[in-house]
Length: 393
Image 1 (cartoon, rainbow, N blue to C red):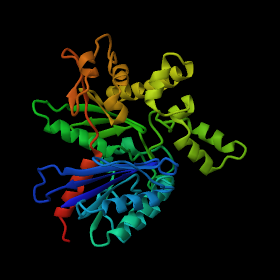
Image 2 (image 1 turned 60 degrees about the horizontal axis):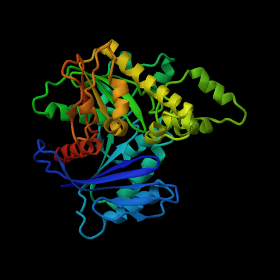
Image 3 (image 1 turned 180 degrees about the horizontal axis):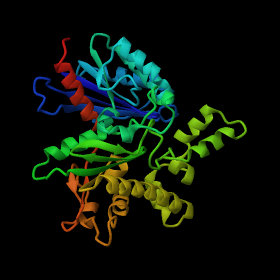
Image 4 (image 1 turned 45 degrees about the vertical axis):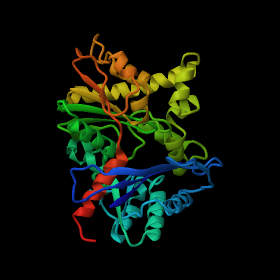
């Protein structure tokens, strides 16, 4: 079967078509086509299908964008789609597993909008558009939160009145599909002794640090929403709740304006003017503000890694996500000298341009350090293939 995977963000939609055999769950689905529509809402929106020329397009909203993507996938020579899997930011309190999208599931997602008001409405519109275009095939929602359901109650419960906790206000955690893909790849790696206590640092535009024991999530930095935790590209990470109250009391402030600021105008962008880590690195040596922004980011992530290690133990650290996979200087700054004088990172291995899972720590290091690609879209395809195999048409 051919599975279309849709991974949407605030300004882009990534899409892939996988060829999967539900009767052979031991075999990974194979990518046959992938692409991205970037720059949604700008004059420079661009649709790219790999192995084809990029085209400038007009996409002023996610709904317009998904229509362009679906039109592109209807061209001759592109495989007909048998199922669609979507990455959905927040399931809300009622949905606790990846599942087929029905009218009831869409209703539950609409009720979850208060948990992710900047992401959920557009995701629901996108799903409705694709379901209208492909009414005869099955559609599935996959949630980043599902992987973190192994966390203990002490790790998920906020110390706030019960009336709010009863509404589903708790720590959900995100980047679960990324963490799950790391576990899957490390378990499959030949000659690798799977680490019992592992810390996964997913570093990209969004960042989180997760502690795993025996491959299961026990703690993570993101909470009710993807805004909390460590410092990110446009999000601040954890803040004093009193600061949020201060911002709300400012003249002209509204809940919506503060929420917009915390999700799109904070983090590295607020500190330096851009959330592009490459530009930040290029400028840090000669610009005080860039250097400060970089140090704040590194201190935030280092604090999270150290805290997870102190509480849960650590046999291995894994870097993943765009920054984690491709920024050797960030890995060196975060992975070296965390526990005393001994360097954990082996310089040549860290600087090498090698695709796939690789170890970058020195042999004498007490803590192994790995770089592992985040294969979130593949995980969605795996889950969709499994769900499709277990239910009737």
